[in-house]
Image 1 (cartoon, one colour):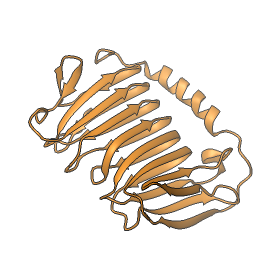
Image 2 (image 1 turned 90 degrees about the vertical axis):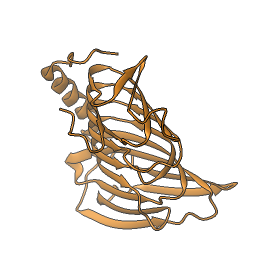
Image 3 (image 1 turned 90 degrees about the horizontal axis):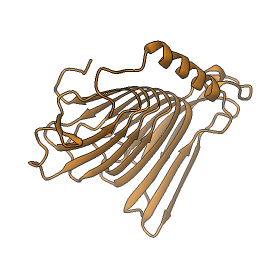
Image 4 (image 1 turned 120 degrees about the vertical axis):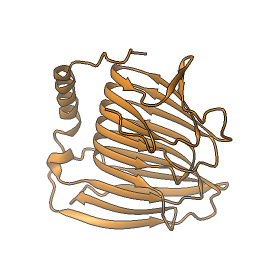
Length: 246
């Protein structure tokens, strides 16, 4: 792990960020005015669901509270920015995929926003692939058992605060930019964090061997197991109710 206090020089981060962003969001096909569309997906006979999100560039908002398996509002540029939403159920297991069209031109091609809500009481495995942009994942109300987040270029907030009923296995792979992971205080948390070129700020967590833990670890019946691989930039670990890590 990179020791705290040894961040990559800001100038180098900016150069690499701009270069990577240019690779991901330049080009694309001509676009017209933006469209806004609402979509819902019913759960059907599924007892559990695997969810995959693939966004190359834009803004992603994800939370719980949906009436259906998925309630979503999409904003995308016409004529070819419409996201591809697919859902199938096999032997009681659902598979929901939302994918941005390939070749979309990123911010230069128009505004692109996904505002997604998932159903709270359905066991979920969630996989998120991010390109360039901002994402805000508020996940504490969901019945998540597995989480994989692959960051790209930009800013990502992963909020895991909430009243967890089951253990969680979470993996967050840093990209280029900053990531904030918000953790509960009353649920045990065990974090393994390995830095890339940047810095990991652990906030109120305490070192325990090769891991960081909170005060509830080993005392609560539920544990969040979080593995973080740092990229280029900064990763901040924050606890609910505590001041932001700076």
